[in-house]
Amino acid sequence: MEFNGASLNPYLESFINILALAHTIIAEDKNGVLFYNASSPDELALTNAARHFGLTFTERDEDNNMVIHNKFTNKSAKYRLLNVIEFTSARKRMSIIVKGPDGKIIIMTKGADSHIIPRLAGGQDELIKTTERYLQTYAEDGLRTLILAQKEVDPGYYDNWSRQYNEAQVSMVDRQAKMDEVSEKIELDFTLIGSTAIEDKLQEEVGEVIQHIKEANVKVWVLTGDKIETAINIGYSCRLLDNEMEIFIIDESKTSKIYKQLLDFNNQCSQLDQ
Amino acid sequence: MVIGGDSLGKILQAQGKNSALIDEFIKLTDDATSVLCCRVSPKQKAEVVKLVQARKGKITTLAIGDGANDVNMITAASIGVGISGLEGQQAARAADYSIGQFRFLKVLMFVHGRECYRRNSYLVVYFFYKNLIYVLPIWYYGLLSLFSGILFYN
Image (cartoon, rainbow over all chains, first blue to last red):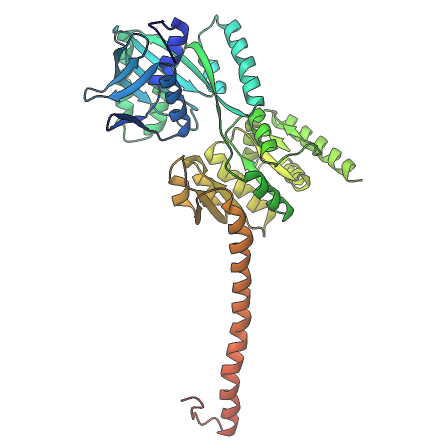
């Protein structure tokens, strides 16, 4: 890509900035070539995307600064890494707190829409609606979606919070629960920045294998952390589902309603059998 | 059938309390060709495997996964298969069998699995045969030697 000193749109820049910063990747310099070591392929994809769009995460230096190289201005910015609140499957989000080159403390987060949208600040309804519409289409295409959001934190508030968080981190009992509780306090009132979608490519011959397994009369259950739309789409692409199948979707949160749905579907099943 | 995270959570919670709900759920999964559970947490993955095992009695469950979030499920299932790959080694380490790609599951189940079963059954049958052949001469010789303890085989 040719940049010719063009500048990034500020909204776009903050979006790509989150991609470049909110991760736990370790960058390695192998004979002048930059390598990323990531614990999850998703993070790797996102940080590589940021690199592609001009903001390269180059290293984490000795002083715990994350260095981001901007291709447009050809300058490097240092973000001091203050805290990383790690991803857990219960939280379904990861946050990173950094002190920017301008001295502002910013918390950036990325995670599942179901867990981030409730933590957004008010007055963004329009934007949330648009984003949700996009997420819906992404999910229907079988893509894995994430939401990015950030917030500027008041330094005084941060100091106070940071103390609590450190206390929780060294606690001998219920450490995880305490850390989660403290994290909740700062992961609030975010500004929605955008959403990402990643294709999780199936491995070779997955469809064929599943077909064979089904022919052998083995019952296949798929347990996934993805949302329903994504899961159904992947179900089709790995031949778990096909067009001749009747699909029953159970997605209620009330026990009585689930029971009713189950009864209903069981009735339909016996009718289909006849 | 497709089931969402909230619903699955409620069904798993109902264990031991609301057996009618679970009965209906299991009945529907019996009729379904495949079951898709979405928004499942790692803990729930294991719970689903345990629920099926508890409800269906004599069945064999196989769980296959590649990520750290599949570890619980892999350890809960009768046979755990881990794929070692991009998402790290946790799943492969916790598993009974570890494979490099999903497609090898076919070979694992239908070639090695079936062959293992066949060879084991063959061995059991052979075991009876061998014991018969070994013991009968001793026994007949015992009749001849008035069970005096003389060895037939030297």
